[in-house]
Length: 272
Image (tube, rainbow, N blue to C red; front, side, top):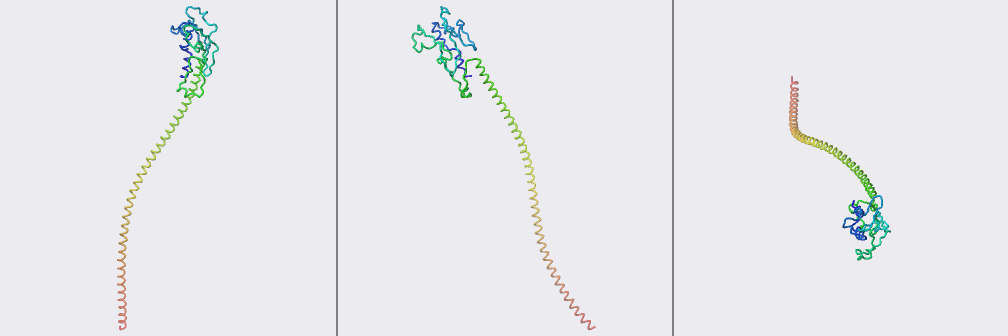
């Protein structure tokens, strides 16, 4: 909205131009409230669709028709960026109010057209906050109310379309975020299940370790028993070997005695 402030001021006619108008008639309408737009006596009419036509103010005590210039001033909207010099010139009069002016001030047109490059109001400076969002070469604004409304409507439509696209992107982002959240919840649930199974397996592994420790202890006991049994078997084997040797020796002795007894019996049988 800052880019149209200067144009609105240009439409409103500054007090300087009003003073220039009153200087030609000798009446200070600026202080009496009868400027360009001050009083109805100036016969001022303004229509946004028609060029602005105005007559200079009528001095007090003079006839309006006699004091009015023959050529009425036609005010057209200022074309920004393409100034055109006004073809209409009002000759300056040297009265008591303008006698001390310089030549450049006397030649100044007190009724400049809006497209005159010597317009009183300078070109409006665009607002930096607004200009940074515009294109490098924005369309030249006009003072026509219908064109301004149409331009604002077009900008509003563009902003509405852009806002709609942003809403669609925001909706898509929300859907993407919801999908990511659902996937994250599913992954968290899977992680909880895996964590529960991991803890259960850790308990089972601990139980197996305890049972393995018990089995190792029993194995050690069995190995000790086997070692003791082997030692006992070895001792028993030695004992049995010794007994077997003694029995064989006794058997051999018996066989020797038996052989001697047979020899003795043979000898006795011969004699019988």
